[in-house]
Length: 168
Image 1 (cartoon, helix red, strand yellow):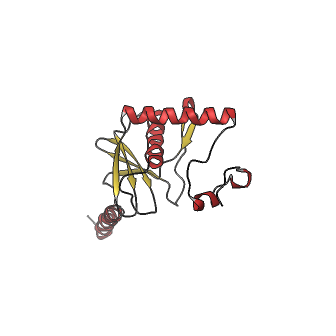
Image 2 (cartoon, rainbow, N blue to C red):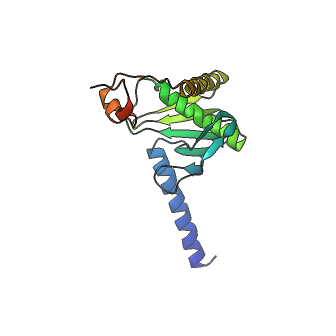
Image 3 (spheres, rainbow, N blue to C red):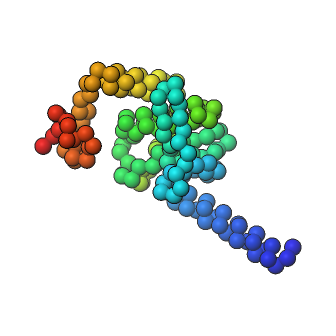
């Protein structure tokens, strides 16, 4: 092996080690990153036409047990994941299942200080499909109500100018 070849090999091992260390520091499991949408070049959009759903997980990791979608949140972890975060992750699991033909066994929600594993069960999938159906029904009938009592969330909402239920 030439000196150049040896230097390239050492550099590859070093960069691989840094990638592993950064992923560990970020709280992500080992495995090959298939796609990521955290500020670099956007990952491809996954589509599930039969459910009228499209999106892209923040990170998609290939592990021995399958493809694992990861949703990254910037805030501190609650005692347990919020239902909205669980359902968002379930939507990514459904998108992976439909668009890539592989059902994830679970997904991860990564908060700033903790990671939660959420099993992608048939019950969670059915809960998601029920929520999607209710959302479609609300769109058809033009009836959607505020689902919270958080003034800051209201102020940041894109529908605030036309909302009849805005707080403050």
